[in-house]
Length: 453
Ligand code: ATP
Ligand code: MG
Image (tube, rainbow, N blue to C red):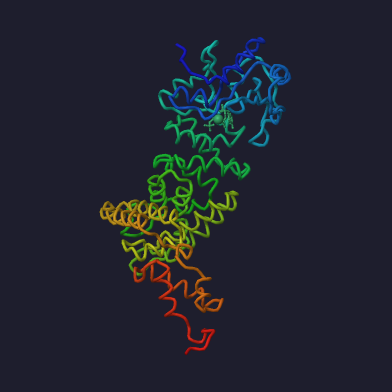
């Protein structure tokens, strides 16, 4: 029985315009998959028997986006965004493991579905024509299976990006990769080297927030194929009574336990990459990792630069890794300093990373996370108070000090820092009166511009 998939009016409108001129038209790919699993599709792609030329004639009165015309795609501007319509097409050989050498337009929608990556993505639907599902995508979706369309090895050889898409769809849709699909993904991971690094980053960045522990373990070798810096963490025995797991399993547990915030997930994945190079065994054979946080930050910087990650993400991830051993104790004074130094968002992320890192040790004592709850409660309390974390929050500024008789220069900056510390330590109220009175006491005598009476 055909499912009742509800398509939005602007999509139906485009489909009807094509059908009225005798061209079959379907919604296809991700939107059909998402509608069938009861999720709201992010966008709707259509496919049709009409050629790009025919589409341009049919939608002549509308705004058109023709950037993808060569590949058979015409974008129709509607009140609810652009609907992308692609002519049914089949693809010739792929010699660069990413792009087909040529495409040709075909009349058979099943041929179009055959070029798609996974069965769950290879379904088309039209209210008039029903569900087109030649590869059993609906059943795979119901049984939570990830299966390549056709011969998995051939499909990943054509386009290696599909391996990373497979990781993403498996994790985000909770699909278990079918055996042949999984073994081809793993066996052909070396082809990922040929991909543009931006594309690798985009896929990984989308996959990471969804990865659970099992995904991280199962797909570890694929992640290491694009991040070779992870390789040394596999089967790495930390030789520490504080750690129950090997290093990569610890990394996987930490990453999986983190909220789905990409910066945090990247930090989790890379936070201990500094451990193998920092490893020192003491006289009892126990492992120590001096400086591994700073080393890990350097390694992460290299990874994210190579993958062309946005600078803001790279900087945040490096900060989190560099500081992941910096204590966040249940002490308001110290927390205020940390908030001033790193910013509120980074302190929250750091706490989340440290919590996951601690729990990920896997030892009996690592079950008690109450210390992290206490710091979290204190952070909430501080945020509810009259906050004063940085010089910007101080109720006076450099000009006020100059009016008091201070000379501009480094001494003035030091005085402001000292005042901020006093306020953070609750030794001084953050009010103009109290700050000016304290500053007056701190004014160097020789800076007094007028003779004292
Ligand atoms: P989402 O948009 O949620 O990431 P999606 O399935 O819509 O998922 P898109 O990248 O928008 O993914 O691609 C739309 C459709 O095009 C897919 O559903 C799939 O059928 C096909 N497709 C996309 N990329 C590939 C690829 N690399 N190889 C084969 N088919 C692909
Ligand atoms: Mg999509």
